Amino acid sequence: MSIRVRLILWHSSVFAISLIGFALVIWLGTRTAVDSDIDTWLYLQADGLARFIKEETHGTDEAAVIEEAREFSSGLPKGSGIQLFHRDGQLLLSRPEAAVGLVSEEPSTFLSDESRLRALSGRVAVGENEFRFTLWRSLDSTEAALGDLRLVLILMVPAFLLISVAGGWLLSRRALRPIDDVTEAARRISLQDLSSSLPVPKHRDELHRLCEAWNEMLHRLDDSAKQLHQFTADASHELRSPVTLIRTTAELTLRKERSPAQYQEALRGIQKDAEKLTELVQNLMELARADAGQSKFSLVRLDLREVVSEVRPKAESIASQNNLVLAVYLPERELTVIGDRGALRRLLLVLLENAVKFTPPPGKVHLRAAAISSEVVLEIEDTGIGIPPEHLARIFDRFYQVDDSRTGTGVGLGLSIAQWIVQGHNGRIEVQSTAGIGSIFRVFFPAA
Image (cartoon, rainbow, N blue to C red):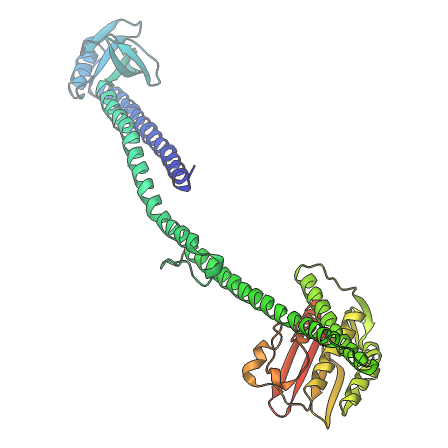
């Protein structure tokens, strides 16, 4: 069942129930009000008749009482009447003629000559004599009016229900038309064209917000698809280069007999390319596991100074091989964080190797660690070539390299891995760089 049909059914059902309830309230309220008015009239007339007989009757004989009752009855409206009785129940007067008789002293309804009457009995004392009377009023005109009202209400319910169904259909059609437009637009969007957007209605309603959310999601998917495409292309290129070098070196070496020294040189070249290929494959697998949520850190409470001390010898060796000076500054008090020791070592090596790679000799690399407020900060500063401002926003993208001519090594995955490690430790990484002067990488960890 479509949304349109469900909306019409719900709308019509609620409207029908409300309309029937409204009709019942009108009917019952009107009937109660009419009955109350008639009863009030009977009470007032009974009280008026008793006072009229007492005040206007001179003497105590029955003839005088009957005459006053007859005079009072002449003032009653059409469809009503009076009967006067002696105390023993003998009928003395009936104006007009009607088979009513004595009834309760509370208003009651009964049938007389196929007419429904509402009647009330009372007593009046004149001297030592007591008389009884009955006032009545016909309900025929009232019943006719109530019958007309009932008929109008009965006819009104289906008529208004039909109008409700038609109105609900028109409203649902108009309300759901933007959804049909969005559905058609969504069907035209494919994986090859995620840049397209759904039409956004002008009215800032729920559908407007839904379309905006879908467009934001499409833009994210488009960015992810582009990144995936670029990642695949870059990974293929980077994997192809060392494989091609290994194959070419082996083929050239095997074309003719060579000396042991030449074979050793060829094998060293193959070994170097194989190491580069192995590192690349390991990095790719690590990032793939991170994307799939399968790579988890073993977080423990540790002193970051110990991690720096473990990395320091290797970092100094790398700096020395490149004719650079590595200066390390550590505070005396502990720098406690919650982290994975192996991952933090890798983070430090990635940032230090990156600093060494882009710092020409003679230059300096400074490693600082400190506790600032509720955070522990690592800072790696170099005096290298720096990063142009237009590239700062993308240096953490996978396979992104500012300029291939700046270095002959690396595939652009180191900083991506560094960022992943920092995020896995609920930290953040920032970079500040000036072309030709140097760069500063700062890593912030929550203090434990």
